[in-house]
Amino acid sequence: MIPDGGENFTLGPEGSYIGSLMKCTVEVLDVFPSDRQLINLTNQVVDNNFRFSRPDEPEFDARLNNPVPLYPGKKNTPIKYLVLVSKENRTYDEVFGQIEKGNGDPSL
Image (cartoon, rainbow, N blue to C red; front, side, top):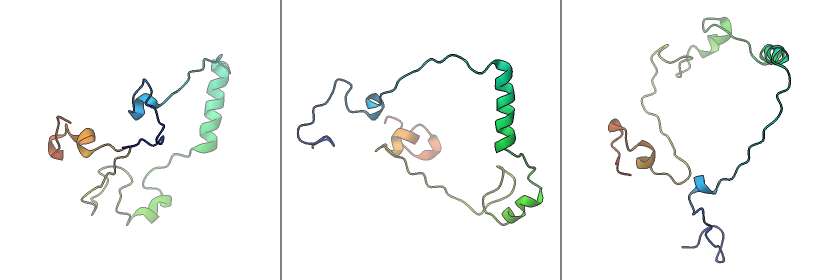
């Protein structure tokens, strides 16, 4: 089997596991703005981006027949099963093997 790098691919010292191949950097910056300015700027961002609403407000009336409840446990839903597609070539057993209800293989 030839890795994605082609015929001339040479495996590096970190191996082939994707978690080991990912590189990153850390940058340390001076704290700016000041603590007081940061509070004011944070409040401004919240004012600009968020409006908190109660779930019984009229804007949520369109969700009354939505099968997904606005909040967990808010109402019964006809959804009985959820399908999860795991990425990065990971198997069900790798992700859920330890869960007893999952009928997986915990040794994986």
